[in-house]
Each structure stands twice: as structure tokens, then as C-alpha cells.
Image (cartoon, rainbow, N blue to C red):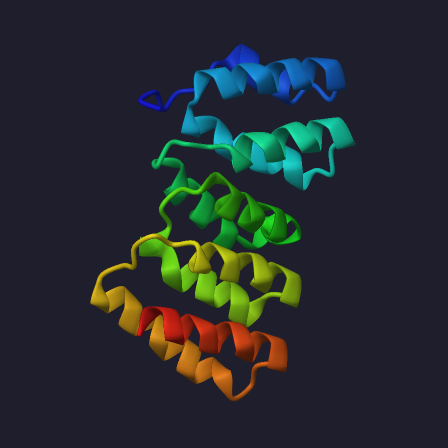
Length: 168
């Protein structure tokens, strides 16, 4: 994932609206392995694509193996414009198994602020972390959890308390 530029022809094919063309372009995106295409994939996913196109996009996101994609994914999770696909993006995060430790507060915030299902996906990301971040990031997360516990639903309280057990 060294390249940061996108191929304009490939972009055009991705945005063509013709399923066969889009799926073919998605195969090429997967082969190129360029994180610069991720925002285009998020936009496509957000546009309620055909089931086959959505499946291909989710497959790409769920099988990413380039650590550089973590920043792009976590930034997308925080954007209001992607609220409708936040659960799908969060699911892709735990599926791809990349290292999200430095973004622990993002996933804590998803548990606190999003619906239970998205919170469950965010909890799964945290639960599957192999390493935990630096103490400063842990302290920030603990503070957010402690502030949210009193107003959290029982299901969310469970997730938040379990995270405290994991990171403290």
C-alpha cells in the first residue's frame, strides 16, 4: 500500500452504477491494495449498492491486511456521513484483525454513543486486541467509560465494565 494515488479509469468504473463493471473494478481494487480507494468504497457502501456489490466491498474491508488502513477506517467511523454504515465498518474492523490498539477511545465511543449492535461490534474489536495501547490512551478510555457508566443501558454497562477489566 505504498501508492496514495488512484487510477481515474478505475474510479470511473467503481462509480459507474453498472454492477458487472463495479464488481470487476472492486476485484482490481483488491488486487492493487491501495488505501486511497477506501473512501470510494465507503461512499459506495453508503449509497446502498446492489447486494453483490455490498458483499464484495465488505469482503475487501473484512480481509484487509495492510496496517495503514486502520487510520482510514477509524477516521471513517467517526464521520457523520457514514453513520448509516458504521456497524458494517466496525464489523470489518474486527474481521480484518488489524491492530486498532491506538484507537481504543474510538471504539469505546462507539459503544457509548451508538446502538447496541454497533456497540457489540466495537466491543468485539476491543476484546480481540492482542496488545493494549500506551497508558495515556488507556487513561482516556477509562475516563470516558467512567463518565458514561451511570447513563448506560444494562447491555452497554456490561460491555463497558468488561473493557475496564481488560485494560485495567
